[in-house]
Length: 113
Image (cartoon, rainbow, N blue to C red; front, side):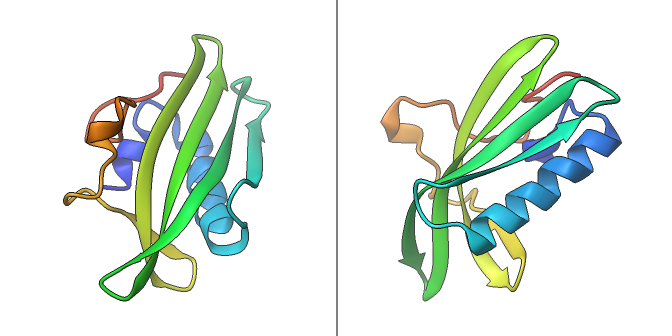
């Protein structure tokens, strides 16, 4: 679920993260990042596209979401597929990077503000 991407973030930061997530996957090429910053919580983050591929005729993107906060830095890797314009959804069905040895997105708290 999309909530797994923003779990642990306060609502204002979660909204910034999701806007950046959608914008990055929609507009950025592989290797490029977009950032967000919430001065009210001293939290910021980046979303970086790692690669693009197709699954069931939909464009999908592997990405890393990084959050910088008072509790340190957290990186989470995952992938998402495009359903509509600016509507990228986390791929939780067999598309996770579970064999890569990386930490992957699951329905759990990823970041704490």
